[in-house]
View 1 (cartoon, protein in one colour):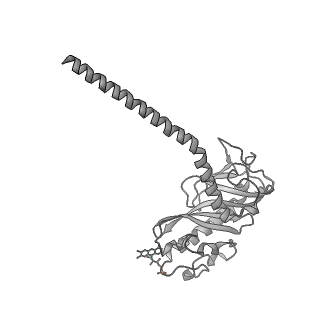
View 2: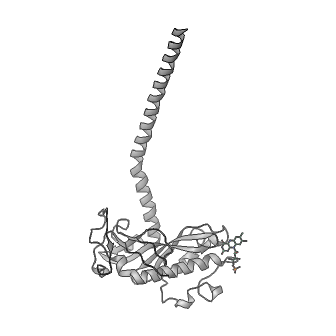
View 3: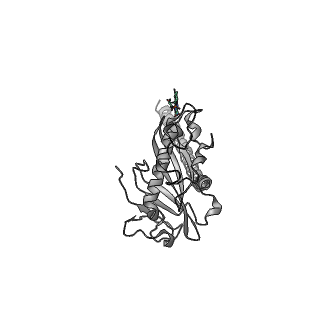
Length: 249
Ligand SMILES: Cc1cc2nc3c(=O)[nH]c(=O)nc-3n(C[C@H](O)[C@H](O)[C@H](O)COP(=O)(O)O)c2cc1C
């Protein structure tokens, strides 16, 4: 009886040891696969982001490293943001060309509509893209560039073109088309884009300013740019920095 028990215990122990070895080998393989693919995944994500940014600011218009030349924008009421976001700065031979930054239209038909807004240094819109939304397919989703060309109607518009009172959908007396049976979504996007232009207008120099680091250089802790530090964008060197929080209540 005792020897049967000992034999049984031995067999459990050896099975447990075998399973443990397999578990360790499995975990090691998962870990190794993660390590070997993490760089590829990151590179692919960066490529996707760059591709999206280049639909707004074409690559031939700038020659800096767009993905590295960023500035952190603190939550801002004009942008509808409640978290830090990044602005990507395009420059040609060091001179500012355009900035691309995030904005949120809070009042879509089905909630928030997340957009990317690109603005040339002279204040004209380089392009707008909806990057996330929950609008109804076949109705409000025409704001998405993959569904219609409506969003391209913002290209080259600025705070003065059209005048402020025309920054509305046609049904409200403005110049922007609405969609048949769906005015709420385009109305929300038009307002968000206008507010993004107001934000750009108020922060242009700070948006293109930097902390003096070269483009692409990693900065772990970047202090916020204060008003006194903000310099003429045309003379500033690219890099990473932070825009302070602003309230527009
Ligand atoms: C099921 C359903 C989904 C809708 N989805 C949207 C939408 O995504 N975007 C939108 O603007 N309007 C949507 N509408 C229509 C709005 O309720 C509203 O009637 C419309 O935006 C007003 O535009 P109009 O003044 O051109 O009719 C939806 C309506 C229904 C019944």
